[in-house]
Length: 274
Ligand SMILES: [Fe+2]
View 1 (cartoon, helix red, strand yellow):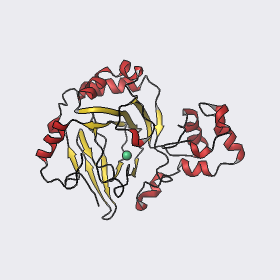
View 2 (cartoon, helix red, strand yellow; view 1 turned 60 degrees about the vertical axis):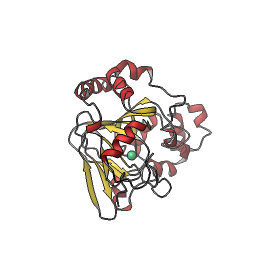
View 3 (cartoon, protein in one colour; view 1 turned 120 degrees about the vertical axis):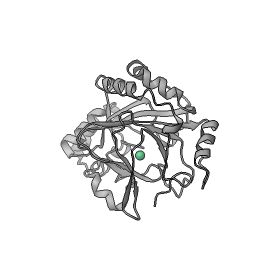
View 4 (cartoon, helix red, strand yellow; view 1 turned 45 degrees about the horizontal axis):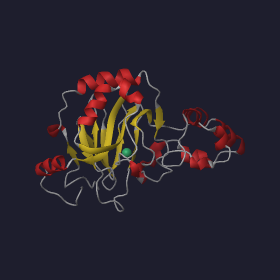
């Protein structure tokens, strides 16, 4: 089933936000991404146990599985490619990756792709406000837009700062190269987390086909809006397409007035999302 928000599968935020800048932001993001170093993300959803059983095969080669089966020689190669290769020699290989103490370095990601065939769905990932652990994404404490983000994406930063948040703890660009698909996964466990985290996804080009996945009915529900909020404890994925696509996700805490306005538009609240 799709849990949704307040009885809706997702909330269309277009009517409540000023999106007149999105065309200019699209130009800026494409130009900026051509100039800044980007990373890969995803690539371990199956081993993280966050995929629906019926779609696990779509993760292709998962780096969590690869890392748990490396030979001693390959573990040494992997450590040598870390951002801190000396420290990495004494660290557990499984300490690297998403939601792990150590971030995969760019060199490790490429080696996992080239040597072990790992599939990283999001190959153009750029953190404008870096955040390490998922459960810290809504808090602004100790975080800020990087100097690089402010230099290459000034209109985007200004737009994000105008969004109706009291604080922002994470902001990143999630891009998929042509023909790649975003593996279906969920970000939170609906049983453990009945409240919906506050975030806005916006897609300036309007061409990233995100969908919610109903595992019981084996059905997709596409979100074809340029700004939206969904329950990320619902399974979601991105359709493949023969061209580059991206969206920008901003996590934080919504302004009370914005939440009130949303509730007025969707007056059938189920469980509290505040
Ligand atoms: Fe997600």
